[in-house]
Image (cartoon, rainbow, N blue to C red; front, side, top):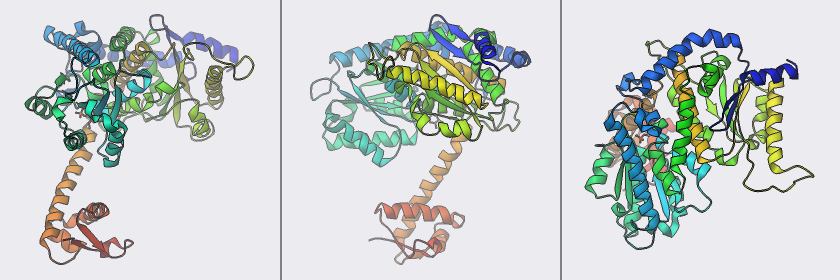
Length: 529
Ligand SMILES: O=P(O)(O)OC[C@H]1O[C@H](O)[C@H](O)[C@@H](O)[C@@H]1O
């Protein structure tokens, strides 16, 4: 296609939202008007399904749950006055609490104001808060946030060492929708221990964000924690950034949460339009569908050309892959659906993997995110008439062009700035696009049955570890693996037993292993007394 025809195509497909000043360009995706016509019936159904979802249908049938994240930014849309009140009350509760923390009305027992937040959570209870913090926290926030989002002991130590002697003035958020996620529980126990060692009372620093009645909520209540904020049954972890899960940590850092919500609300209005070409989420879903043949055949590479948006791709990984990566469709057919997501930031990635994107496997499409405003204030010239921001723009355009020349699709979202309003809008845009795409491919985008398998296996392995330790403690002589497995009643688990014991031995946890590491089957195991 010559450049003039391409320019025409650009104009024919361009979407612009005047309230958000956001553009979406899908002219380099290969989507045609024939695709639009062909997919129209599927989209009509998806729009109808989305209306039903927003009206409170049980859109997550496996879990028997409503899907209500859109109500979070327009509480009047909630299907009952009680839910509307729950939402508005939660926002009010956050604002009141945060004002009291910032003013020092709620303060650490040792005096002064709270200076730091230690946020403990994983998955949807971490990724949104991390993305929004990196995108929007002011340079000198009223409270500095630190995340514990894993059960890695060294990672926990590192986070606590960043807090240093400010544990005394740290607020601890324990965030878990279910209130029973082991990694989060472990993080909490480790932080509680750090407080105990310093002679500090954990409850005077602790705040829970969780569903009413959860284990965490009961614990917080009975131990007299500072506060408990609600997480709602009808909001999934990966769409919880605009619930208290995301809003409380954001507000504590001085991020304007009402602007986040306002941006999302405007985007929700725009993505409720039941016409593909004037609905940016529908245009995204259409592009994903056409590019990946409705089967996710191409990976989504997300490249924000702005450092502050770097974590967007990591955030989208969960939103897209946990929502769409499904074995079965809603009719019970095996479909193994999904779209793989990765990305970091431009131009940085141009000096890393963009080589392959241009010349190697053609198994992806790029989503460029362009931010029009370079920085507040003027820029210096890095060469006559050219600024660093001009380079950022020029390199984005250059890569988009270079990819197109090699038949590699891309789409571009252009936003005016990386403000709270824009970030809220981007979150809402992708929530809706994922929802619509889920309807197009007929999967339940709101459950995650696959995650359970790994969790169950982990629990079985930890029970086996306890059994092995007990067996070794009771044996006077060193045992071969086969003997140990037999006594422990786990003959089929030889490899797992070996791997569990090797880990214990490496951490001086009482297990002694003798013999050559190259022959794991011949090793002798005993308990160090
Ligand atoms: O918020 P929580 O209940 O602790 O859950 C945290 C995360 O863990 C799970 O394994 C789910 O797959 C995620 O969707 C969820 O966000």
